[in-house]
Length: 81
Image (cartoon, rainbow, N blue to C red; front, side, top):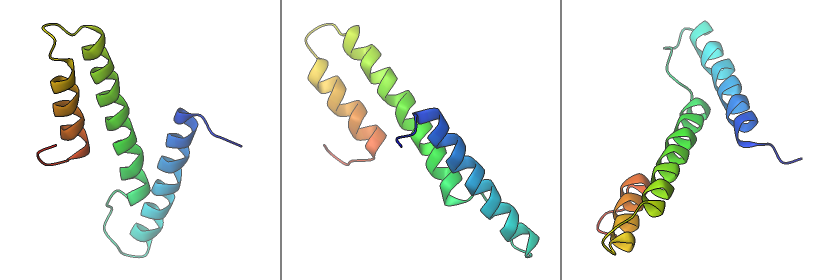
């Protein structure tokens, strides 16, 4: 069964919260678990891709490829792409 994006992120956040709460209950710090961080990163990437798509739709001056490369490189943390 393939989960839709929102359900997947909700499950990641739920499971991350469970792990984080368990760690805190055992005397650890209350830090976001990597599953929670992954869900947050997915949100960031989806937002960046939507922004990129919007820029592609509204591009001008023939600079579409440069715009895509610069934004995609920034989102993916790729140096000098």
